[in-house]
Each structure stands twice: as structure tokens, then as C-alpha cells.
Amino acid sequence: MTIPAARQLQTSKTSTADQEPTVNSPREIDTELSEIYAPYAQHVATIETAQKKAKLSYVAKSPERQEELARIIDAARAALAQLDEAAAPLEAIYRANPWTRFFLVPGGHLHSSRRCGSLRWTTPVYWLPEYSGKTEAEIVAQAGERACTICYPSAPVDRPSQLPVHVAEREAAAAERAAKAEQRRNAAAAAIAVGRTTYKTQRAAENEVSRNIETMISRRYQDAADTAHRAHLDNLAAEDEAAAREIVDALAAQIEGYDAAGILAKKFATKAKEFRKHGWKIPADATF
Ligand SMILES: [Zn+2]
Figure 1 (cartoon, rainbow, N blue to C red):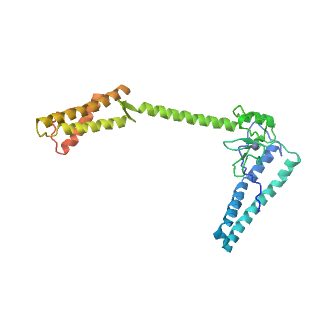
Figure 2: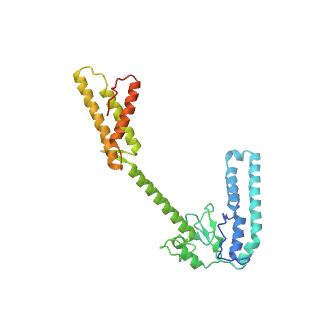
Figure 3: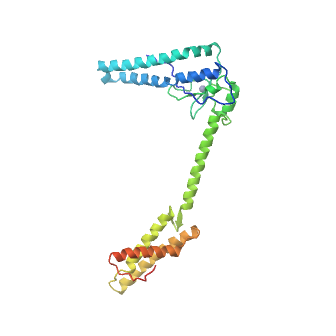
């Protein structure tokens, strides 16, 4: 069983205001052909898949399944034959007096034929009928390094393509890179460095301030067993206090107009209220 040469063709944008196609121009004919051939690859894939399935051992044992696959293959072949039939009159015009044709692999090269040896039938290829009949040297010069060197041995490999599709591709890639760089810059600007620790955001740094204040309160207002225990708890509370202060000072250094003292006072009041709710005795006039 042989598979017809695959032609996965799709139309691309064809109309431009500045060009007036003549009737039956290469561009018109190829535009029509690319539309006719659009479903081609799908039918070829259907045949390939069915042929692979037919070789499976469990299918070989099932006459019903074999018949079903044969029907699928026949239907796809009939569909291909219909496409070829529809294309035949137009292909005859081309064969009588061939013109240049251009095929583009997305993200790849520009080819003069879908049958270029560097392509597999599964490679998606876009026919560019808007270039049909144009001077090959001109288009190849524009395509630069994106021109296939098998199809166009004289292709200039040392300069970027100026084909609109590739220019747009490069612009989109550059815009994406710029957006990512901007994102990284913003993230870096948002990060708060405190000594050896880096908080990803202001919020993360302030959450750490809250945690420090919470432990500070628990130590400062805890009942001590004796004088030594009191001194120990006070030392720990002083460490928590220093840690909280270091973070808000770092925030103040990096954020214009940051009210470090105000943040400490507000967070202390919030936490003290929570502790009181749980029965802790914290003087009403207690502050950070
Ligand atoms: Zn090629």
C-alpha cells in the first residue's frame, strides 16, 4: 500500500490592496489550490493510522475490525481522489507553464516545493500563494537565512529574513523578552533585603514583622518563675523587638515615605488586642 504524496497546505492571507491580480494569475490559482488541498494531510494521517492499527495482532484476529479499517482507508482514499480531481484543472494550467511557488514551514525555512527532501510529510507547511509567480531571486533574497539551501542553493545564509512573517515573528519574540525582563526588574524592585534574608515582597517582610511582634509580646508579658527567668524572657523579647525593627528600617530605606514607627505601633496594637482576648494581662498603655 502506498500513500499519496502528502500536501499539507493551508491558505495564508492573500489580499492586499496594492496588488491587482489578473484572472487566473499564479496567485489566484495557487490560492484556490491551497484551499482545495487544505484537508489533504488529515486524510493521509487517517490512512496511516488505520494501516498501523491493521497490523496489530488483535486486529489481525478480528475480521470485523479489519473490514472496518479497510472501510476507513477506502473512504480517506476516495476523499483524496476527490481533492486531486478538483485540483487537476488548475494543476494542468500550472504544468503547462510552471511558475515559482513558495512554501513555508512555521518556525523553519522557505521551500520551493512541498516535496523538498528536507521535509517529512508530517511537517506542517504553509503555502504562500501570495508569492506565487514572483521572481525567485527576489523572494529568496528577502528570506535570507530562512531560505532552504536545498531548494535555493544560492540562498544568502548570513542575513535575517525580511519576509513580513519573519519580521513579525522577531518582533513578537523581542516584545516577549522585553516583557519578561520588565517582570524580573519589577520583582527585584519589590524584593526587600534585610541582612542576609530577602523577602519577595513588602507584604512578606511585614508578615515577618507581625510574627516577631507576636513572640515579643508573649515573652514580655509572660509570668516569670523568678528573677532569672524574667531576665531571660526580657532578653528574648529584646531580640524579637530588634528583629522587627530591623525589617521595618529596611523597608523604610527601600520604600519612599514608609512609616516604620507607625507600622510597629499598629501591628503591636493589633497583636496586643488578640492576646488580651485570650486572657493575657497587657497594660492598656503598652506600646511597642
Ligand atoms: Zn527545501
